[in-house]
Amino acid sequence: MREVCSIKIAVTCPTGIGTSKMLISRLQKEFPIFEVVCVVSIVDIDTNKLLNDDVKFIISTVNLNIDYPYVKVSPMLSIDDKKVLKQLKSELITFREKDVVDTTSKKDESQIDNKELSLTDIKYISEFGLEIINLTNSIFFYKSDVMDSKYEMISKLASLIGQTKEAIIDISTQLTNREKIASTYIKDLKLYLFHSKAKSVSHSKLGFIIVFGSA
Image 1 (cartoon, rainbow, N blue to C red):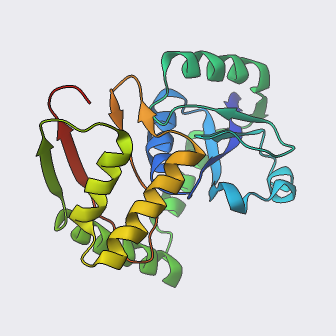
Image 2: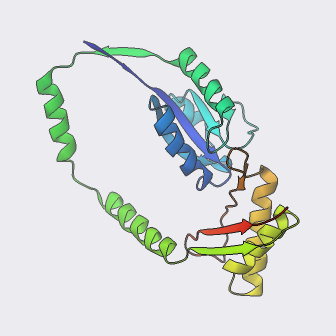
């Protein structure tokens, strides 16, 4: 006999991408007991589905206006965030016992190894690979002596990515709207993690803006 424990959670951010992916990576490292059932944007949260999936609470990068238990944290998980999650873990953790023998374990491992990929899995892997290629081909760096505000950084970021005047306006607007929902500033790292979706950008892009001097 052995004790098996897990806590089902959902992870959300304004878009369901970007900071949520970073957050999941941190959660898997710091709290492997958390089982991420779903990753959704804040506009797509279905509380009825979460109840049916036995999700104990939501971990979000922004404040939520819903009738469901949730915790707001930084994407990088600050020291205070970890304290709150540890407390929740101790309160919600549940154990369930099951018989485990070596032969059963080996059988389960064999079944996992021999599991066939579905067409959906293959499509996802292919699209993910293309995104990685597009991302590595579009990384850019920009250095500046000074920028007076985060919105000036957003404006510069949009001008570096957008190919047309309309695209620059679109990107700048989407990044600004995302920042207004909740600041993407990560205090522990002293950086902004600007991110969003924009109609004028068809593939993922990654860039770094380094500001020297006072900003």
